[in-house]
Length: 204
Image 1 (cartoon, rainbow, N blue to C red):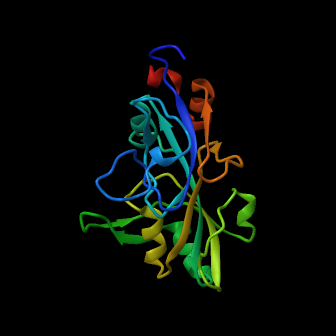
Image 2 (cartoon, rainbow, N blue to C red):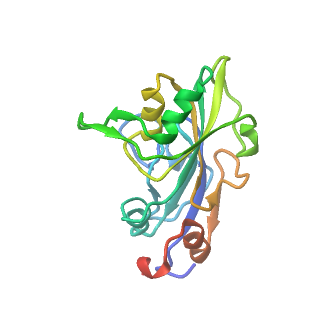
Image 3 (cartoon, rainbow, N blue to C red):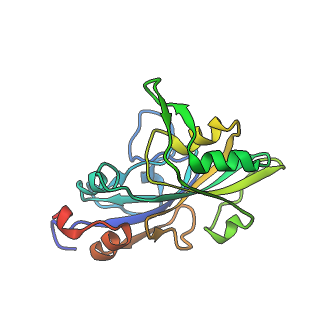
């Protein structure tokens, strides 16, 4: 690999792993994975310790700003297991907007988003087998363009359900694509930007 060439990685982040390489706490780290990342690699955005799925990593410091901090919204889709059966009324509330308190204590109402019930969650990604919710439960497919702190969990809490499992399966057109939990694949820059709908000129 030529010096100065930026590199791009897709990880299926496992449950109980933080989105960083070092921590003062005893937690699962990205460096524990069986993969040799180059010096300077960092996560683009984060998934919390209890969340799973698509996590992007790169040595390019500009990508996080363009993907999550720009004026152009980018779709993120999550496969979410919640406790109990969801009512039609609560499903519509999620679709049209729910209100919750954000970190500062101010109430925030979410923008309308795509939410649907799915009966075959295994069709969307390879999932590690582990104990999840007791029946009854519901699997939802939620696509948002906002990025408030723990937004999906707070949306579900606003309708008085609990998230039992949360798996990010795609960002724009970039998907897990049958990547197993804990595994990494590297992507070329052009294809990485194309699938994320980021213009190359913005990064250069």
